[in-house]
Length: 139
Image (cartoon, rainbow, N blue to C red; front, top):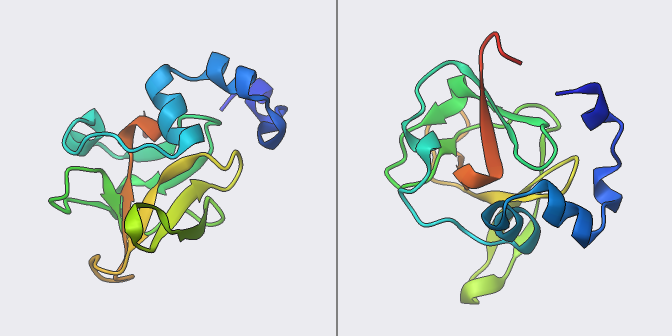
């Protein structure tokens, strides 16, 4: 993360500023709560050690040590980094789910479910487009 990134008040960026910062598909997912198609994210195949950060504001969200293959077609983790994400109830699509968002910019990341592996039993099912991977030693 650059010093310039830490000086930005991400929660008060205008819609136009977000559109400048993000690609159209990132904007749809992070700002409009969209979902990428299952199996399309290159992050599904990422096996290196490193950190998964928010594509909107660079905040570190997940350590690669918590990533697992869920079989869902989306990058999945059993635990976020401390204070990295927030959650809220999502009642879209005629069901209630728990939405996960970046704690700094409030960008939509995905959803969390109670069917994950030990030690947490949680599955953070994230949109790969909403994140970027930073390999160890490059952050």
